Image 1: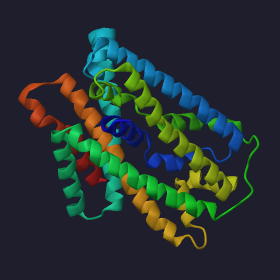
Image 2: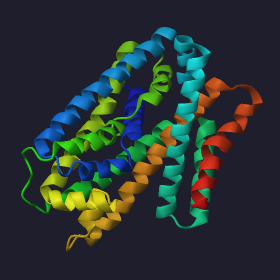
Image 3: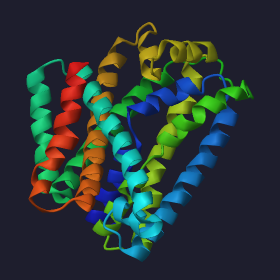
Length: 308
């Protein structure tokens, strides 16, 4: 792989893997291991296939980003519906990320530094974001590995068989979100010069990261925590590592949990900010684009999160 391809692969991984991966075992705790793995493989295949289909459309139309793609395929009415849903979803995600960072950094000065840093990255573009994202991705891989190590120190009776399959009804959206990278497809197509072969390779390799992360965290969670403990976490709204920290002798785990949360939130924040900035650039042009991303992507979500 060349340097740019590696950076794109890690960018896809950083977009797909977020702190929400910690809620996946909790949401699936009562289903049983084998049904969970079967559903995860099936939905991974579906998300990989749809990502490749979307990439083919982008390459064929040479669309700058999703707004222009939707306008070319569905016309102005489709564009208006898409933009409303798209920007609402991603704006809410940015508010959630800044809120999560607020829980990690109570100091307004620290968050102010982060907001300036993200704003600078948006102006610099992927040539500066790519290497940084690769370092951040390496950071959460190390933190994730440390947390898995802690989980392997505990062993309960694993629920291998079929549990309560009705739980899947409310868990499918959680699994799908664990493979979400589609909004970044036009960006990666441009960065890879609309080369179909390289794009397919990048999407396949990039989505393998979240797939293996999800399988590993699910397997180790089902091994370390009972179905009752996982379901109690769902009721209390606690992620899997918070449940692990409640175990005796797992105090050090809490520190690694904070480190992992920081890396996953920041990589997701940078990825979503860049993706949404490209979409705004597709909708608007001119001098407005010098200030609009800072206001919409960085300023407003930060202010709203600070008011909570």
